[in-house]
Image (cartoon, rainbow, N blue to C red; front, top):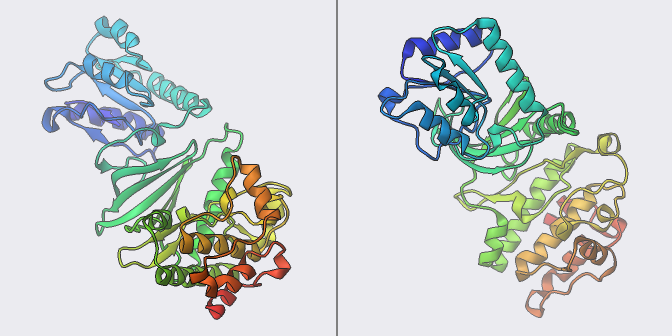
Length: 397
């Protein structure tokens, strides 16, 4: 991002960058015409900020000072009229300093390259995933207007955004490729595989995928925005028996479709089931899903994925899992929808995992006894004693 009040200078910097990195995505901001950026501006979404000393009615060093105090702000390269402000720029943690009328092209490109490599080697979260950036164009994701950040981890971030071509609200999931991270490449590959799996599915209760984009450093998925919140919130508010049955029918239908093409979800929980504004459900977040035939190759045997409250006994033990594991998780969710309570609780994760394996299937209140047989067949401890397909859930209902 280039921030300076002179258009010719912004164009000059952009020319330097594009000459060396033709695919670079550059945004610029004119503080003279548009006013100063808000104090809460975090720089999120930018690898580097190029800050010139023409900042309208605000002292440029004051702007640099504000940036330096903002947690997670990307590196700032400062451009001044002369050498007199170099010490102040260093004090306010500028990543580099240049005199704006004397910018050696090679020196600038080498310094920018060094800064980006240092960022990728850092164990801290990339600037794309830190803080909020305010409404505007996502610099690294062409064609989308940023609205707000929904969540972030060390490798990925999820945003609410608008598609520019038609103002469609979407959820934009972005993953950073950081080869120097221990699991950077694996996480990137799993993210792309996640898209490939979901994009092939067309079902009213599976989230719709609108777009995929990939660059050298990032990949993104634009998916359907589901405005009704998640099932976890709905359960906390209280679900009626009729709604619980309707939701179970919809989720089991989505799982049947997922399983029919050889996909396991493996992290089925209320937080991964979203509601649309019309009240219908959609299954989301296949971040732990795997092609059944690639299960051992991709994850290795004995590795535990998922959430303990909803894990099948075999998943909790780190054993091989199949579609019947998702059916068990769905049974847990059904019990929680009907009663408002989780079937098994403990003071620590291993205690919950143990109960899933050893404790009896929970008993529903008398008024809900009509569903006990179905629950028994979904939450049976041994996979061979369960319903063998998600389609059977709908048949029993």
